Image 1 (cartoon, rainbow, N blue to C red):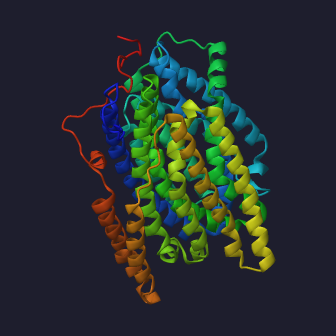
Image 2: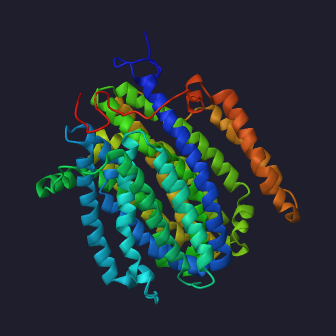
Image 3: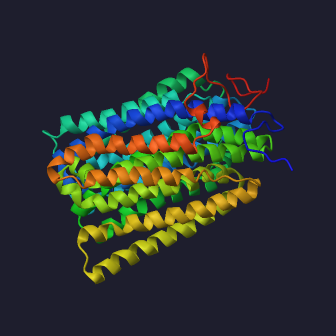
Length: 520
């Protein structure tokens, strides 16, 4: 009986080509991830050392509402845009402008509500006149996401790297530092607004160059509402995924003072850096999956999910080891008062790794089982909320320190996303008739070897904490990568690091011209 590896040519003969496309986009976005990391670290250092946990807690609450509003304003179109374009004969630019109108309407509604209710964001505080205008930046974030998704459809992921990994993080880092002497209380909010505006400009310029002006486009209410209705499941999936990652912060707002929230937020920001690896593949993974689904190539979809799943799981597991083992030293770098968040950091990093398989599987489920995917996400989100409160109350009853209590939501997140990954990967595997999990047994040996090395560095005296970071972290990475490459890597994994001479961006759907989306 002949079996398929998932990398042999399918009936369409394009599986290997599309894995190469994923690798190409992945290479660009991994570079972007490194650039984002380098740019993000100064902001975390500035925010921790200058502004402190109390101001950070207030900032985190305000930004929480803006982030969820911006996500809802995109109405799932970051991922739904690829399908909308691939299934329509209308010019691409007109479809994108339909999406921008939807985002503008949703952003306007959300901004209006938050402008009228500033106490919701600032929790009864006294926001400055400029801080009150924070909701106005929602449309900038939503439009930037949609324009970058449109560019990614044409395989231009460089624009996403520039906007999200260079312009946005460096703007907020520089602005936060410059504004502190003159605005020590609202400097973070102002820096955030400036970074979102800068990212929008960095998205508009390449978008106009690639798509041009919307010649002949007219606003069509019926078409607009049809787009909203069709993307409602995608919007729900995005909101639930965001809620899964941020409901812990919301629970902390209810249970603890701003200082505790600020410490947890810092741990969350450090832990979210590995999570950017998954979102780095989103712009290129969505179009490739929709292309395979359009041809009925389910084996190709399974191959793509499995391959990207391994890349992301392997990378996030390594980063979790590098950040959690020397956790006290990592948190102490941004300020000694943040060391209390070490336990939360460890579980948040583990959660990022545990969530990777489910997140990659969702990239396919949102197209082939939208309602079921949303149902699973709702069920697991409710489970996470209940478990979070249960852990906090249990630790309060036992009498554990507040720092441990505040780590309860992180533990609940880790458990919830781990179970979600198992459920979604199993379900997707049954739908596609092929395995989709990226886990490989040799990864366990890599974890054990790297963990042993890292634990040895934690035994050093406190005065050698610098060595724990400067030498220990690279040692953990080196051992982990060596074992992984020697026993877990396969020939197809080398595609991620193999750049072809003269490779150029291409449309994900054969037969469509780059200019107007009309079949040739």
